[in-house]
Image (cartoon, rainbow, N blue to C red; front, side, top):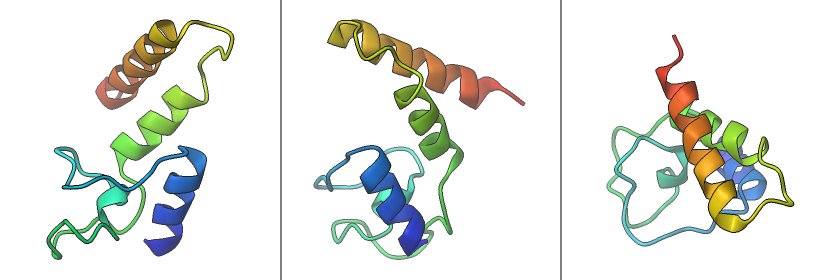
Length: 81
């Protein structure tokens, strides 16, 4: 889980935020603001969907288009069986 948390932080260029996410994510694993307990044992399906969305965008698109594409990709990944 620690390796997955570090990988997610590195691959997503994420930073730790205050508070916990509403969705199950490995980013809450080492977050001191999140209560210990039902931590995921690795990347969650939301984490994987976000990474797929992030790495599938066209870097030359406008920021709003990139965000929209990431969101659309996440929804497609989560809805897929």
